[in-house]
Length: 397
Figure 1 (spheres, rainbow, N blue to C red):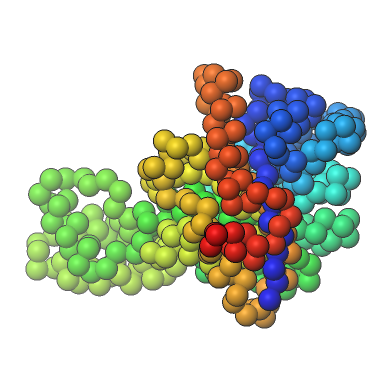
Figure 2: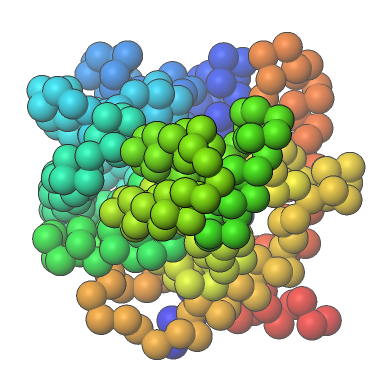
């Protein structure tokens, strides 16, 4: 059984537009006891916005300051710039190619120069694609081919753990446990190169909205619609199912059973639009896929949204993410037998605090919540590079 090394890292997205030079965020984090940093593209190192000469200077500055401070960039990560677009799943082929070759590959180049890993999320499926199963299947395959190309490119440059982040809505895959397993297997099959996931502890907040309703639920909602009109957040998946539902509530009640049967049948033709109850369970994700997640993004959450809250005493009282439970879930993932078709299990995991800062938030408050979050997680990872088994043993003391 693999016994991975565990590290505590911080994503420097909290410093975006405030502490933007490597010397600045390295100094801040170093004084907080952090030596492992995930460098966000949002914090002035995005090839979409910066030219190659600037990026070369940025890499050199990171290397110089790292030697001075002992703080390392262990991973690069995409930011909101590319997250906000269709990116690798764009309807225009030229755009897909540009993101693949002019953004992702330069990021791999930078990661290779720094001896770092790379994680990203830069694709989404438009609703027109989601509404046509054949188009969806074609675009899904195209995405896997592109990710496989990135996996091979990363392998050739010595970047060992490229990976994509899991999300929580149908238009941003992978968003279910089974879908994540399919992506891992397909990309590995196509590339014969390691490719992984980033699990985020707040990215299980949306799946419960997209459960497939049964006959009883549909009948109950029909009653509410007839009596009170529109009811929010009622998920039927494809537009064709909603059209049938609208027809049903305008027809005599005697015809309802036939309509419900048609709706159930219609939903079955769109499996990509539905999640299972277990897909909304953070610890289930970690138990099944934590061993294929070299980066785990840490955020506190109450389970209702992905707000990237800190691990302060206030938020921990209301939150659902706890160090003990997370480590035990990872241990379970590594206890499972190796599964044929998957990449090798990770030998290192960077538990990475990804805490966002508000535009009007005071600098002193930002630094306090980062420091408090680090203090909380240092109780579980007191020494970077400790084995998972050692961290588990510490829980029992």
